[in-house]
Image (cartoon, rainbow over all chains, first blue to last red; front, side):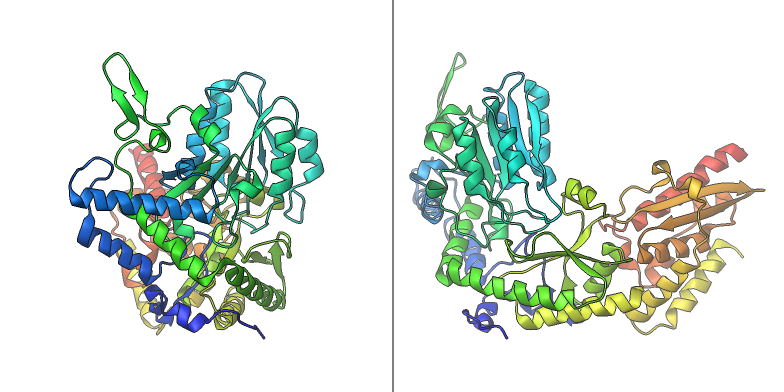
Amino acid sequence: MIQTVLDILSIRKDFPILNRKVNGYPLVYLDNAATSQTPQKVIDTIVDYYSRYNANIHRGVHTLSQEATDIYEQARQKIQKHFNAAKPQEIIFTSGTTHGINLVANGFASFLKKGDEIIVSALEHHSNIVPWQMLCERTGAVLKVIPMGLDGKLIMAEYHKLLSQRTKLVFCNHVSNALGTINPIEEIIEAAHKVGAAVLIDGAQAAPHIKADVQKLDVDFYVVSAHKMCGPTGVGMLYGKEEWLNKLPPYQGGGEMIAEVTFEKTTYADLPHKFEAGTPNICGGIAFGAALDYMNAIGFDAIAQYEHELLEYATKELLAIDGLKIYGDLKEKTAVISFNIEGLHPYDIGSILDKLGVAVRTGHHCAQPIMDFYKIPGTVRASFSFYNTKEEVDILVASVRRAKTMLS
Amino acid sequence: MSIKEIQEEIVDEFSMFEDWMQRYEYMIELGKSLPMIKEEYKTEDNIIKGCQSKVWVHAELEGDKLVFTADSDAIITKGIIAILIRAFSNQKPKDIIDADTSFIDEIGLKEHLSPTRANGLVSMIKQLKLYAVAYQTQLN
């Protein structure tokens, strides 16, 4: 029995989409690792922005522009406070995690030389591998990979062997999107710093569950997306230590990012505007702030505890199904279950679940190297959020059983 | 039978089902009767792109008619390709090229028709028609 620390029924009322029916069944939304749902407060913030103070920021002298600027900058401060960054200018608004990663990769192109090394983990999302491959092609740097074990954990002894004076950057996700594994980023960061390498952590999968403290972690860069933490799509943040952000060249040219322009020379704006060329996703940034307010009002400790209870319950119930195998470690992970049933294709299971109103992800989860490692075409991934219930876990399990009967 | 007649027959069969469960169960059955592609043709080249599951299709001329064989690693996908092959196999390339595919709509599989769906039904139809175009050129 789940000893709920949260009033889930009241929380669910905050999410209008959870009342939807899909194919005649009540929606059971278990694809939270891809996109989380949006509470009414965040939706209201978006409507309010366009209804009352939609204007371009940082430029206008008129009231609407000043209001929009103030609230946008307040959102930056909320994000700064949430991740405990030392200064607001260390928070760069991006279009999402992928944008943040590319911004850093592009910046490093001007420092790297032939023979330098970049280390990435074997647990990465595609988007996390491609920018580094492109960077290596451009600079002659070499990409090294921290291998993973069958338990879905990184083999840390191998990581320590890979580190050397040649290592310039280490890149790893805080939590794996395909398996939910929580990586030992404290150890990764500390060891990288000993050889003078910078560390970029992809916090996209961690941020909805774990409140990262960037100063305590002593991480150089940390990236997240708002849409995985109750915010809108198309917005995210890059945290960078001020000294690093000052060192990196601008990523894109345009308005906002300049101080002075003549045809002879342009001087760049100070942080954070140097990296925020053009009109940003103003409404998105503001709604991101509102999403953090919403989650913090519930509290990350309570969220983590409740999701862990859901995870344990779902793991136990799913494992009772004959032939069902869960990939990755069962303990050090967020509320994600990546599984297969012997002899069945994940796509078939996902199709039947959808027909029963249960939304899961199927496929390789943009992490093909991990699927290759396990020699499987993909998995069914159920990912839980704090608004999911034990009853929904029961529906998932019953639906998986029904799919199994139909498909076998 | 002409492609149109076979399609009408399939639509008739599917009209007997009351809900999606029965339709899917029938599709899974059809998948099991799929004319199997020979192992030697299950190559990377014969994989249809755009499917979340793997689908292999092979085509060869028998007289003036085109015969398809296929396989997939997912059962529902196998059912879908089996329906397509039943409608289009053993037909003249010209007729395959000209054939209408709206019967998919009528058998309640419309959701699979969207080009963005991961099962790639659209890619499968396109591939069958591409084979027909290629063999039509050969026949000319």
